[in-house]
Amino acid sequence: MQTNFSLAQLADPATAESERILRTCVHCGFCTATCPTYVLLGDELDSPRGRIYLIKDMLEHDRPATSDVVTHIDRCLSCLSCMTTCPSGVHYMHLVDHARVHIERTYRRPLLDRLRRDLLAKVLPNPSLLRIASTLGLLAWFLAPVFALVGATRIAAMLRLANAVPVALADKAGRTFFPEGERRGRVAILSGCANQVLKPSINAAAIRLLNRHGIEVVLPEGEVCCGAIVHHLGREEETLAFVRRNIDVWTGEIEGRGLDAILVTASGCGTMIKDYGFLLRNDSAYATNAARVAELTKDISEYLMNLGLNQPAQDIGLVVAYQSPCSLQHGQKVVSEPKTLLMKAGFAVRDVPEGHLCCGSAGTYNMLQPEIAAHLRDRKLANIATLKPDIIATGNVGCMAQLRTATTLPVVHAVELLDWATGGPRPAEIKGVPAGTA
Image (cartoon, rainbow, N blue to C red; front, side, top):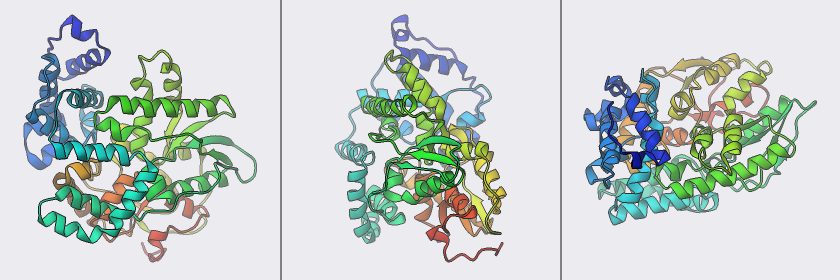
C-alpha cells in the first residue's frame, strides 16, 4: 500500500511503525473471510482491510477521528484472526492499537460513552473495585431483561456477565508455593484482575499442577493489571504505568531468586505481556527489562508441554469441546499445545467448527458492543453443540464468562482439567458430569 506521510510525521516512532505496517498491506482481502464483524455485518468498513483504509486516511492527514471512523474501529474485536490469515504479514494489532490511542486523544465521545469507558477503565483493572462491582451485579442480575427491554443493552450485558461467573472471596493464601519433592524450576504466575476475582480456581489448579511436577510458584507482591483493558481503550499513559510497574516487580524476581518463566492462565493477558518489549522499545530506562519479561512470558500450556506431565491418575473419557481463545491462537500462535495436553490426559478433544471466529468476549467488547458479541457467542455455541460435548474447555476467563451466559454446559479452564486428570480435585463445574461416559 502506498503511503504519503511527511518526514515530520515519520519522526514520531508510533507513526513510523504504522506507516511500515500499512506498506505491507497488498489489498488482497483474504482477511475479510476470517473477520468476525465482516462475516456478521458484510460491511467492508467492518473488515480489517476497510479499517486499514480508515486508519491510513486518519493518520496520514493527521486529522481528528470522526464518528464514522470511531464506529468502525470500536467494532473491531482485536481478535487478530486477520493476522493469522494475512499472507503479507500485516501487523494489524499494532496498527489498530495506534488508531485507538489517536481516537482517545482527538475524539470527544458522547457523555454516556465516556462515563461507561471511564468506569470500565477504573473498575476492571482493580480487583477490589471489580469484586464490589461484580457482587452488586450479581445481586441485580435479574434486572437484566428489564434493562434490555428499555434499550439499555450494555447494562443488561454487564449484569448477565456478573451472573455467569460467581464472585470469589479474596485470596488469603501465601505468595510462594513450594514443590513436592525435588525442585525442577521456579516460575511466577500472573494473578490477574478478573482471574483472582471471578475464577481463582484457575490459578489454584495451575499452582497445584506445577507443585506436583516439581515447580516452585511465586505470586509476586506489587503486581498489577497487565494493562490490556486500558490499552484496548486507547489510554496510553495508564497502560504504560501498569506495564512499567509489572516490569519492576518481575525484574526484582528475575534478579533475585530467579525465574524460569512468567506464566499466564488468561490468554488475553499473555498476549499483552508478550508485547511489553514492543510497547517500551523506545524507553531507554525500560526497553531491556521489558524485552526480557516478554521473552520469559508463556501461556501455561506452553510451559506444561515442555515440562511433561505425569500419566493421568484415572481414565477420564469425557468429550471436551476445546474453544481456543483468539488471544491464544491468533495473538500468541499457541494452537496445538492445550489440545495435545488434554488428549494425553485422557480427554476426547474435539475442535470447534469455525474455531477461528471469536466468541464475542474480547476484553470489554461484550460490554461495549453487546449486540455483536451476543451474535458471535450464539454462533460459537451453535457450533459447539454439533460436537455433543460433555464439557467446554478454554484458556481465558473472559471466554468462560461469555459462553456461560447462554449455555448449561460446564465451561472450565483447560488447566483445571489437567490438574484433575493428574491427581488434583475435580472442578466444581463438572461434579455432576459422570466420568467415562464418552
